[in-house]
Length: 180
Figure (cartoon, one colour):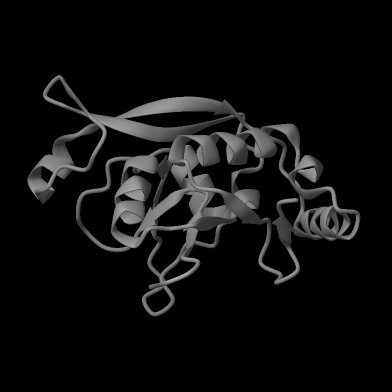
C-alpha cells in the first residue's frame, strides 16, 4: 500500500504532437502561454500546444493515480492575463460530460465548459522568487500570492477536491510557495 501520492501539474495544459486537445488556445493567449512558459520541444524545438487547465483530464488522472496532494507548477506563466479560464466539463452533441469520452474521435469533437477566474499582474522572475522566499520564510503561504493567483489556486483545489500543497512560481528551485 502506498502512502502519499504526489501529483504535479502545470497551471495550464500543454500537449506535444497531434491528437485531441479540447482546451487548446489557437489565439494570442495560447501564444502568450507558450512564450512565457518557454513551451518548446527539447529535441525538436517545435512549439508545444497550450490551453486552459483541463480539470476533466485532471480528475481522470486522479482516478487512475489516487493523488493525496498536488503541486501546481508554472503559475507565474499566467501572470499578465486579465482573465483565466478552467475547463470544468465538456459538451458533446448537447450532452454535458464531466468525464473524458473514451474514444479519441469524441475527444476531438467536444467543446469545453469553462469557469472564469480573475487574472493577476505579470511579475518578473526575480519578483516571484522574492515573493516565494518571503512567503516561506515568514510563514505566509498562499496569502503572499497576488489575489488573482491565490484565488486560482484555491478554486482549482476546491474543484478537484485534492489539496494543493505547493505552487511553483518560477524556474528556480526556490521559487516554490508552500501552503501553511
